[in-house]
Image (cartoon, rainbow over all chains, first blue to last red; front, top):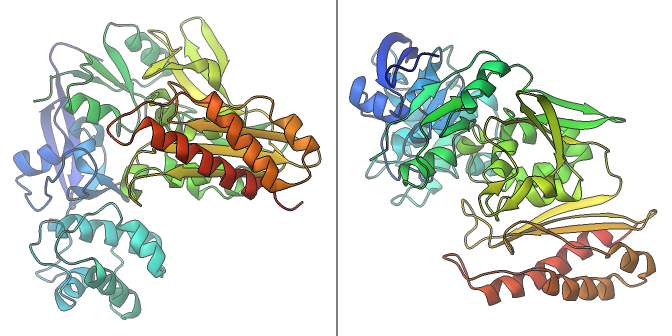
Length: 166
Length: 281
């Protein structure tokens, strides 16, 4: 509760790595990830929570990182698209995106992957409607969405489990 | 460029209330409205007081006799996922589900939605027809206000400096059919041009309809219960209520649509709502 300056000390785990940092209170999680940790996979589109390009998973829930303060993630587990590849291998979802042509310019892809991944972790067998609802907050101006929905559906039906331990 | 502010994360309610006493302090819950307003320069708080994690604020309780309580930290997705709310207060689940997108609903709270006091707040009409009460904490203790006294104007509430909304309570579980309807420009993430919630209970003749986004605060239609008691034909009732609603609202032109369009949509949607909640048993 000290108010000498507006910096906040945070300890946060991002993609399994713990960071201890001091950030100005008005820093967003998105700025923290991109500018402090140099994790530039997470994109800024609109900056006001409407486009979903900045979606990350915070304590198991997808959030728009442009509308989260870095100060708020003290003690939290955060996952970004950089953490989805393990031991040099893309996740099942990332592979499916490639196979189904679910990415064109690629700007929405990191957020889209994180929204879809979070869906698959809370619902291992979502309906098409549930998939569409889960990614409704992720705007894509290239694909027309169909290949993205198909890629997510392909992961559900494949044996390659999308589940992750962390 | 965001104007710098202080961030406080109080551990107790007392600390939070103390922090909220200072000039320019503002409570932060989900932040989905507040951080956008700060970014746009519409609000310039000195200090954000993060109320997430405070004791009892995450509580969502449900009792067939005592009704429901929804803490200020309860996110819209937690509300939507609650089976009791879906069963007994479906109008709340429907209104919550219509708001923004999945990842925003993971953060946005029901209490934050009405504390932001947008005339178009989607949760507000539902809370009006349910007779919700707002429980407020301050240094002296607690006070409570009915939702229609809490919301006082565009972005204005009865909340004073040093006060914090703890929860909203639905004191009695209503009987009857209820529904929420919303007219948007697009199917998806957009604020309502018109929104409304309705509750009808045939055995008691209760009919409550509240319209949002058509005045500075939501408009609860008065004296429509008697029309319902005497009504024999739902279509005629719908026409009559739609007519009455036209005189009760005072919409304006804004960036989303014209005053006239809102008036037309209120007529159309009130009729739909009456048909939906007053038809059948």
